[in-house]
Image 1: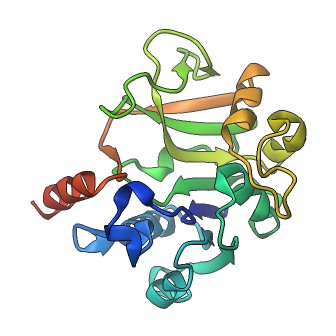
Image 2 (image 1 turned 135 degrees about the vertical axis):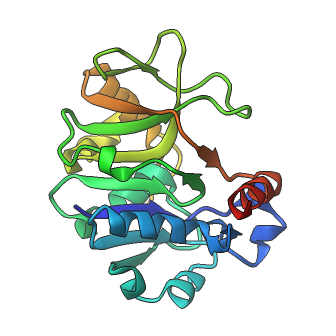
Length: 233
């Protein structure tokens, strides 16, 4: 299994910290956010990781090297000065990710979730990790049924953690799913993943795990400082 780390965003909510450093390279607990992921991915048995980049892209290979210190092979894929968003970023990396299911993780989160809980072969098109709703996102994203299937509506919605396992055919018919979304006609295309997720849920092709442990969307300097203090303690 290969992995994709989304690391191309501008990190606008994290300014001024991201004016000179990409958000996934900001440190918490003595190491960068992306390094926490690389350690966990290596421990999970993954050997190749694709990192999509845009903002201050050159810093990633400068800081991370070729990945050998974690027993990994890193592939950096530059999206250009304008990030392709989650769907476009996954589509742009598809040839590097191959024909088998692949793991995806957002570069700007921190969690103690054990990747070993993820299925290497999802029952449907994708398997997500959902978490309890954080204060900044109280409405949640998706409902999780007792049988593990994900629904758009339901009581006690949960939040998508930014971690999932996707089959390559999840991207099939992406253009029909997103309609005339801005950026979809560019080369390479720029579009969000959410419409494809909703389409998979509508055909009952998405399952999930509820992680009740530690997770944070490191989206602001305040959250980064709180995470750093917690990890150092």
